[in-house]
Amino acid sequence: MCGIVGYIGQQQAAPILLDGLSKLEYRGYDSAGICVASDGALKVAKAKGRLANLSSLIDGGKAVEGTVGIGHTRWATHGAPSDTNSHPHVAAEGRIAVVHNGIIENYLKLREMLSRRGKTFRSETDTEVIANLVEYYYDKSKDMLDAVRKAVARMEGSYAVAILCVDQPDIMIAVKKDSPLIFGFGEGENFVASDVPAILRYTRKVCYLNDGDMVVFTKDHADFYDSLGDKVVRQAETVDWDLSAAEKGGYDHFMIKEIHEQPKAIRGTISPRIKDGEVVLDDIHLTKDYLSQLRRVYVVACGSAYYVGCLAKYILEKTCRLPVEPVLASEFRYSEPVLGEDTLVIIISQSGETADTLAALKEAKRCGARTLAIVNVVGSAIAKAADDLIYTWAGPEIAVATTKAFSTQLSVIYLLALYISRLLGTLPRQEYNAILHELEHLDQKVALCITDDNLSKLRYYAEQYYKVHDAFFIGRNVDSAVCLEGSLKLKEIAYIHSEAYAAGELKHGPISLIEEGTLVVAVATVAELFDKTMSNVKEVKARGADVFGVTTERFADEIKKTVSSVVTVPETHPLLQPSLSIIPLQLLAYYIALMRNCDIDKPRNLAKSVTVE
Ligand code: F6R
Image (cartoon, rainbow, N blue to C red; front, side, top):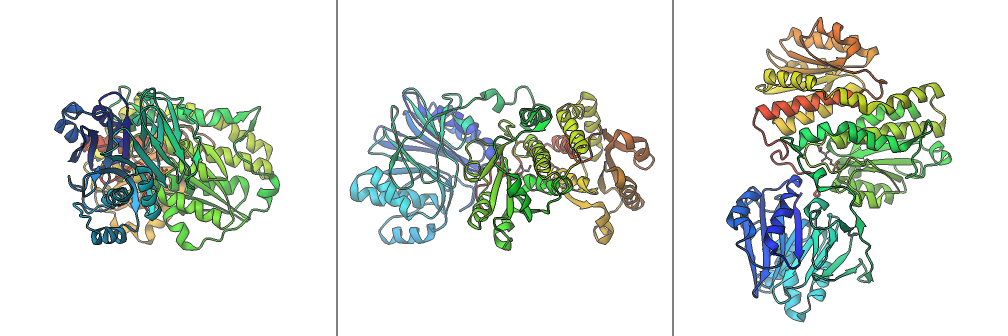
């Protein structure tokens, strides 16, 4: 949500800012803008809608001269998407310009205070308050650092902010609290940005700023201050992945590229953590004593990551014999969860910046629970805050709808299940070995779900279904959790109303919605429950539903007796089966969205990283 880029150097800033913002498009936005300090003025250009609108307004940046600037893609929170509400915001007297990601919770109080002191406002945003607050203090002291410090001391909420002052155009100040911000070290140029892809073309040396950090920088130098205002050293880390990893590489969309990347991503998550027939999680410190006294495990996350939590319940309970409760992060804090030293809270997040998930983690820690985070983005807030951390190592995920992050999060759950069960002795060795064996081959079986043959099949079925208005996903046990994710994929990228139900639950209400032509996607891979799921399939068929079935090769003939549209996936250990059955559902949603001409990588109203509650 919202993307920030700041540049100070010797090159023309505007094209670099536009280029950086284009790499942050995946975060979701509805307007964009830049501000360049040059010739004693702050030159601002903004446009509602796609970045292309801004780019054509300023001739790809060429029309704006100057070597120092800030840029922003805005995802509206305070005030509708409009040119006026777009960032950057310039303060009333025109001396300070600001871009901001996050929410200033006390902005109304600050706005009133500043209005009483003569400041005027053009927009409805909380960000314009920051610009005016800094200018208010700057007017008194003519000292930028002092002014920003005083302003920050008054700001409540979350923010990543980059600030320019017309009087000191060779300096930029950036501050961060609860919103992502990185600093990029260049040669004769320096950068700030919300995420690495924005600046990777120019530098690989980055530093993930801590909460409370402030950086004051010129093109040749940077001073870092921590939350207490003390000068600190922040080391550069070298980014080891390539920009090509964040580009489409010949695919039409990031989503289909990332679907194809799943075998490799899963391999990257799993193989370094299996050594000599054992799961080795060097990154975490859960001892047998600690695990033995655990009374409960919560898995807390949002969206697809929460659905991994729903799967984790089946997987961890079966292997580790521990009670596991998946909880939506947005509900966690307000439901008074029972937390203490005997509770492990597993936090799952691709971005590592999701506001609700981060808040849940902090609450769990405050109440004395141990937290273990499963995160993709290195150096993100959740990665930094958790007691234990397992990276998914999926590489950058750009499509808003997650695929490879989901698959790698699930892979970490399998690893954890084996790791914990080994310490607790809850799985017979034979069963442990059987799961481990399948885990080692999971990437190959996932690859078999993405063959050209399967792609054509799913494209064909998408053609049959892309005009439907409603869809239902049904399954039992792990299949029901796979349905939750499949249904989310369809609604978020293809804009089709869709619901997922445990198949046995249908007759308790939802079956009344089934009518002639309603699409029902039935996932039936759990052997012991296959017949029961088929009974539910027959019930919806009898009421006119058009059923699309997903099952394993073993049940292909059986399901075809009832369902004509079927896709099969290879068979693996039942607990690992979700990693395979999710693939056709991702592809079905992708091809349906394609046929409906949807903006697949940037679905309407959605953001990749949800940094507001
Ligand atoms: C759906 C999707 C979202 C995210 C959710 C959590 O395709 O991507 O539902 O799973 O917003 O995001 P992270 O994992 O970054 O915390």
